[in-house]
Length: 335
Image (tube, rainbow, N blue to C red; front, top):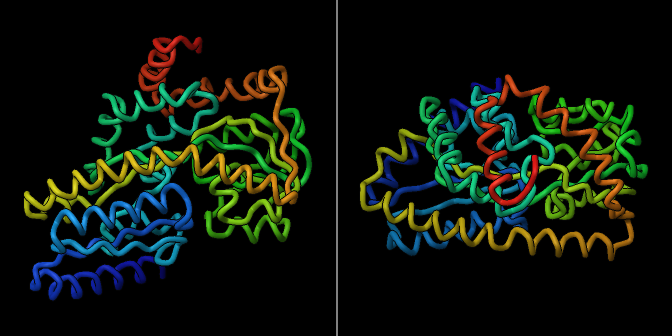
């Protein structure tokens, strides 16, 4: 049923593309699952603005936020079929697609600072990971930041053992499953668009998100407690259908690459402020009590979660993990 829906959408997209191309206008459907007010949502709008401006109207970008077109599990298939041209899925989404190396981004506490993260995504590691997508009909254009994740639940999570037996929503990622099991929690894979209701009804007890996602989806209204563990990273890859991208006129593709470069700088620059502002707004609402861990408490979280690195080494790739460790050590962090 889902495949039929996607095939119909792809066929419709092709029918609609004919007149658009005849009129010398190229339509890019850019679908994503988060709110327009998030860093990703604002980045998508910035790309739309720059792309349309720099191509002189040759390109029209239609942005569809909040899972208006497709949910988490559907959007990559839709892109491969050509039903949409552009997505910005979280990096965890590529594991189920067969590019399990991307799950390195899900490893708890692997990025000790934002600088280390940037060196990884803008350097050889980031480029090599994107190359793994091309055989799947996907071109990687940019890495977009959404910051570090905090844990939320309906009871205080002060120590790692407090998570024992709790049903915690995660994205579909073997690394995230291993992370929650390391805490003796019960990982529950669920589409992002369904999380609020699941938290509200008690289908799940808690979850992990950067503050901007937690706030814009109103999760703070249905979560009594949150702990600023900053244990994991959530980032996105802006990707495009390879057949569509390769078929663009060379000058248009160059203009779009420039627009994406500047939209990426914009999105990544605002990510930290958006998270800071969202955290402040949630604290001001008084609906969620936030706990700032002490150094000793953070050490306990790290001690509980770092063994996950070894557990998933064969899945993610030892060489890839070592390359990230080297970047961290070069920046003065001991891994």
